Length: 341
Image 1 (cartoon, rainbow, N blue to C red):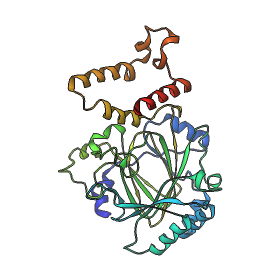
Image 2 (image 1 turned 90 degrees about the horizontal axis):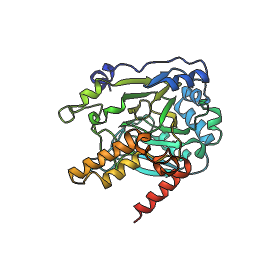
Image 3 (image 1 turned 90 degrees about the vertical axis):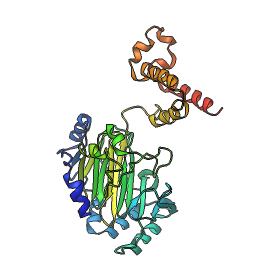
Image 4 (image 1 turned 135 degrees about the horizontal axis):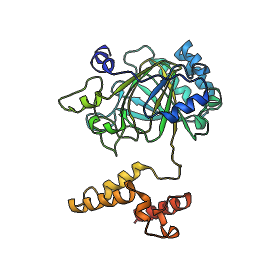
């Protein structure tokens, strides 16, 4: 870790810090932000944070007392603390399921052992898997419709990736390091496949602890605009939508609670689905046809939507008019019929 700190992380500028006095101030900071920011101590008063400061086992006991009696999906690493691909582009971890006390018993057995397996529970829906945890440990985010998730595990490294929603990540137990890059840095991060991923999003193929600049020379350009956030228990980090982030859990036991939300209605489609469909339908066309479709996308999708439909009567524009839940539903149904042919 020390060598990696000297070579990359310590050279990056820190993410800016913002002080907020209450929920209204946090709301204002989130609305105004176009880049990440840290709020120190935002969740320092959570009971889960207090349990973690006592010990990792105390935090596990607290979570076990809130957990529902159901199976949790858990990743068990087979290749160190970096959850990633193996040499054959499979995964270097196995997916299993077990009750949370059983998973924590496995962590207890491995605590302090150098050969202990990496154990990681990612993106667990707090409302579905716990009783009372959200009520006692949550951030007031006003009227935002948030998905609240918890991430629990031993020491881990998660490759740089991005998420479509905005993200408020709150460190509850242990320490976390986020290395962040603006959304336009995707080419400089050398992404892996989009259909074979560790957790649903394409990830950078670069090992941040041992970057190979001969193989990935443009990574230097990404580092030139990168930032780093070193977070302690109680701290929170805002990650804007589509910003790339490499995440490390630095202690023997770590817990993160995060909130995802989108500014757009939930009934709109997911942009990743459109990209996947474009790969299926457009990428491998002859070059002249691809250019035609690029022009059509510019006209209907990326250009002036009002101008594209201005020659049509308002009641006859169909999906060229601003979408509503009803027209979006009809368009989704049409796409499903077409894709099932």
